[in-house]
Length: 200
Image (cartoon, helix red, strand yellow):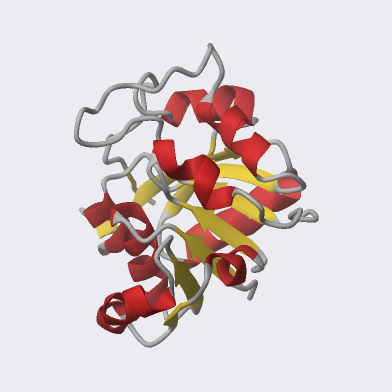
């Protein structure tokens, strides 16, 4: 099993940690304030989730990034080259309290995230569902809740897809970032917030 780190302990980061913990999967959760500030958070999530530094989380095989859009540059600044490891972009270019869309200059948000994680194999995933659905039971109405993923590296997508499957979700590959990332980007894409279920 690849090692897993999470940068960002807000609603999405905690939801991802919760999904991993529910399946007994270990991960390191980090934020900008340091591991001590996360002691109660990880205790509440489960024993497989550990608090760590941003650098410790970023050193894992698969690194989830779930940070407020305006804080992404600072959250990822100064980290070593990712050297072909996988980064999962779980971000959306909008944030509370104003919920004003970020100016992307016509680019997909994942294209901008990719600039902050040199050397990473980027996969867009885990951003389109509301956090309670990510953290909750993916079994729904006799089927499996859908999680979309996209990326330009087939091997990276295969690993993230395998993790999605292990978590109990049904992964749907939307193709390369230039296509898939735009489909799930919020705001703008047609797929965010859709709670879809795949029936066998």
